[in-house]
Length: 131
Image (cartoon, rainbow, N blue to C red; front, side, top):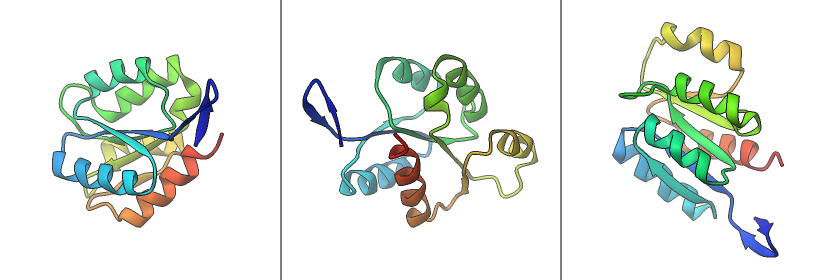
């Protein structure tokens, strides 16, 4: 937990995914682990949310309607580079050559669906606690 104006603040994780059942299971797991977790089902809404909230990690699907994860990341990277380094990508694509170059370039974690919850938990802990 962090303090803001002397008040304890739980680490806040944004989940950006249009797979609502998966998002809810991730939210419940993260909240059991002591995080505040918010679900935003599309990249356009996530851009607005990122600008208005202090976040410690972003779990982001790479393939969504309207604004895909790589574009969301690129936009956040320009306005908030520190948060951009705290992205964890998830993808349902078995073979994702479309995004492979992007993942290789960013060197950020990319987990495949079905997401192993322990792997995601470890990545969230690593990026949210990096200060």
